[in-house]
Length: 158
Image 1 (tube, helix red, strand yellow):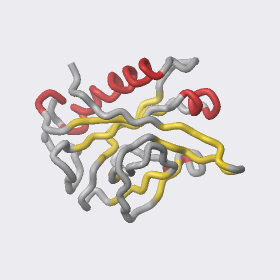
Image 2: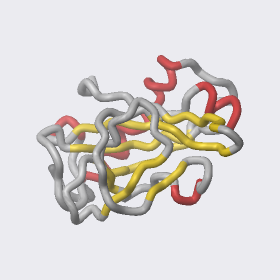
Image 3: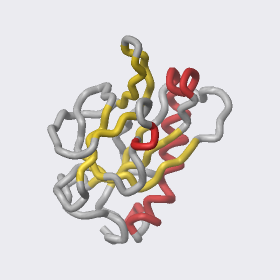
Image 4: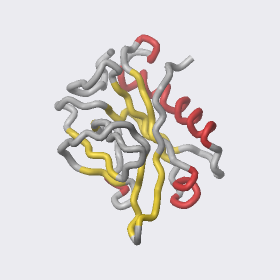
């Protein structure tokens, strides 16, 4: 059984004439670094190896990344595209994300999830993003429940 994890969601909305990506997260923290936007610049949306701090708002359009050598809250360790034609519903999307993020955790950290002091969460598409913007990507994100970390979790055996 997986540990209790925090669930986050990504969606897309129309704000005025501009498209903006959004995600559900917890606390606002100002950080320096490049800003990624899910819709306006899809090539810069979170990628494997990106580190960032908790953003804090329920809905955000940008995720400022930071150098993993600096103290940070999260690190992206996998991205997975869900292979479903129709929106599976909130409960199933979270279940699919949890399952999809489980195995890559061991590959990234170097030890099984059950032996790790780290935990994970994820960004998942919302129904609107799924249906209107073809968003199928899950971003798997690991963190240290004890607080900020410095350096990458890659091969850390933590």
